[in-house]
Length: 158
Length: 158
DNA sequence: CCCTTTCAGTCTCTTCAGGGAACGTACTCG
DNA sequence: CGAGTACGTTCCCTGAAGAGACTGAAAGGG
Image 1: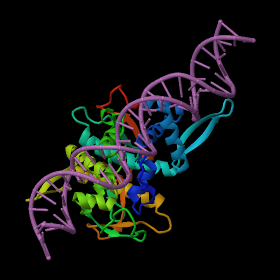
Image 2 (image 1 turned 180 degrees about the vertical axis):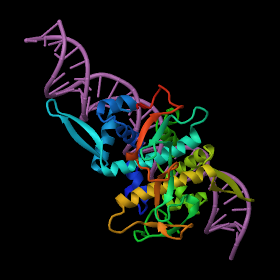
Image 3 (image 1 turned 30 degrees about the vertical axis):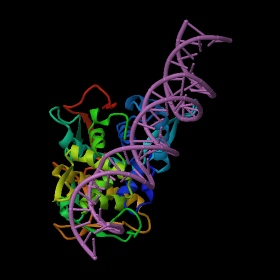
Image 4 (image 1 turned 180 degrees about the horizontal axis):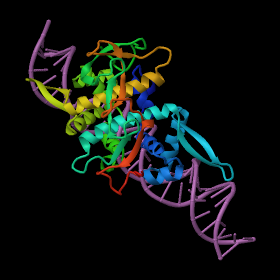
């Protein structure tokens, strides 16, 4: 969709958005994640236009987030499954769920719950530092230029 | 942008997308986060159309993610700052950065680095279980219906 | 053997959102 | 007095999204 090419920016946020920033893409991933892997059922469950669904699926496959595999040769039928790259995007979805539950769920409470295999409890994700393992929020970090920084677009200051 | 009303779905991902899912919104938040808080500088740094920038800022203020404050009364001048709700969205941005760094940075390495105040090290966020504190990825959870589930849209199965 | 259903898309048409530039306003500086 | 800065608003044009009809291939049913 976006006219402005996010993929070219020297910014990991923009480059992530280039892959899944278009409308519907995260919801498609979420549905594939919960087991809705076929075109017809994706279209029905989301209420998305078939045209846009076909476009998004093609794009996500091209970007290596989904894989298109044949589950029946006669008639030829395909389904879409997550690659490792795509499964890691689902971690991002869990983070979105966390924010949505906190700030938009309202009286009714969260629409979906997540049970952690390791402890068996209903819980949610919490961002932690990969080094010291303590909580790591946006308020807890300094932003520094990295090796991949370029003087180009993206308005990256700091 | 999206015609289809994401905000009404019984899905925290869709409802989060309703707030920051439109193109540019996450990049606007990111720039406000790093200290670019005024209209003119946001427009210049992002290369976004002024019209869209004005729309997005109005929307984000309305949703309680940004705050519009007057820093000069004569002439009236405003700047945009993050609310608590908005700062927590930046945690989501850090998660996007993590994925982008891993999968799209390439040879050059990450364009931006983050130093954790608590330990002083360059690091990145890692999703952990809020209950047992062990790593919690999309592969490590069961998805269950929650109290806010409705038989309506969103195709939420499970 | 024909009819219907299922699956996976493709095509066309209309509408609406994004890009980009010009305009307006209110103040400051030289 | 003119130029410059800051913050938008308004305009037109193009291109993307949505609705929904259509295609095509194969299986199932009577």
